[in-house]
Length: 493
Ligand SMILES: Cc1ncc(C[n+]2csc(CCOP(=O)(O)OP(=O)(O)O)c2C)c(N)n1
Ligand code: SF4
View 1 (cartoon, rainbow, N blue to C red):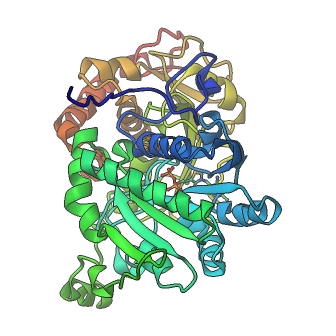
View 2 (cartoon, rainbow, N blue to C red):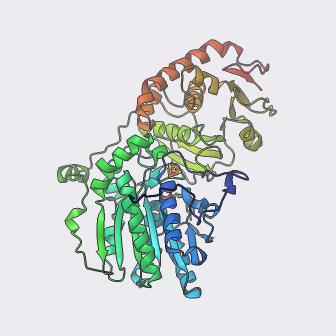
View 3 (cartoon, rainbow, N blue to C red):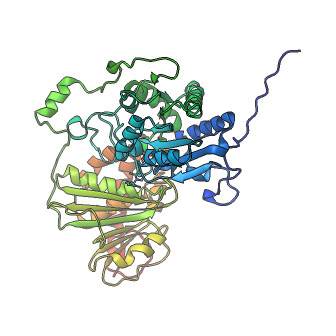
């Protein structure tokens, strides 16, 4: 009789039966579709089961998209401050000698804010396992540049691409940790393809086995997709990982003194920026195209608020990019819930002719309310004489303040008519510029391609701008009316 292989698909025991984060009885995580965190966390859970270490595992969740790992792992859990997990791991190691400690960290967490902690924990050779999830950006906060961001990559904090003089080159953490003498095992793997995923499982298993065997510090770097912030679909993001990320960060064993010694070739890690380009930058050539339309009427203290997924942070990014491309001073300060989708979010933007002392906007003179709860939260904070723009397609109530100018714009509806469900932010920014004349609409047209992540929607976004302008012109007649009929451009106050 031929031998049969039984293939079973079941939840790892190391996971809770249901995930209570989103409500009782849920079985799905909070990660975006196509995110690598879910895949990696499943591999870790499988390995915990295989090694039968669930009862002694302490999972350290970081700050970042994986902040809620303690909702998923039925193990010991500690949620650590951003970047500090290796220090917490050290404390746990000192008090629980038999524990299996997993320090799970993103690249913003580990290579940015927590660089000191990770280097010293590695240098001390702590007997812990560090799983370093490298998605080349700060995920949870909206895709800002991380130490691992490739040269030239555009992010909200490098809108014209990462520049070597300003930002340095991307850091290879596997290379850096492997250069220390204490770590026993350093490997970089990926979850781009099915083959990569199977390999990553083996790598994770080995790193945990090392710890059980008390061999010392194991560091696993895993290249992981963030389709949401990369502006790609899950399939495109996996292609990009193979064609770009894995070239910059080569996969493989960087150090393994558990069985044999692997020499690391430092020449393997290089930045794609060529020397001519570097010399050009050293001579002072700027990559930022500055073009001035007219002076700002006055300093714009802007607050945009709504729920995650409405493009609140991107609206701020668009405004700040307009400011930068006009050569004025800008600041962009996001505030968000832990979920990329559905939580509340707001962003403070300052546009100024002078230096900006603080990016905080406590009393905005421009407030863009994308939904009702945001209007409730910030209406009272608006400076007297300020401007409130209300997304009247969603917000059902009227503004009660009488000492501010209010304009109602059915932003979500206008965007929907253009076939863009999530472009209410572009509507509001266009209307804001139409009303205040802070910058020319030409500046807006020039900057939309710079911030738009999904380039396929560029023409629709530009068409939407024209539609909003048309709408504003047509409804301008109702300006000054205090009848709150919700039509675009209608005002009260
Ligand atoms: C001390 C501190 N600084 C900054 C933050 C804001 N913050 C929260 S998540 C995050 C980015 C996390 O990015 P990364 O570590 O790459 O993880 P990802 O979300 O991509 O998984 C930042 C900067 C914070 N919570 N605490
Ligand atoms: S923002 Fe990126 S890293 Fe965060 S959950 Fe979504 S896809 Fe994953």
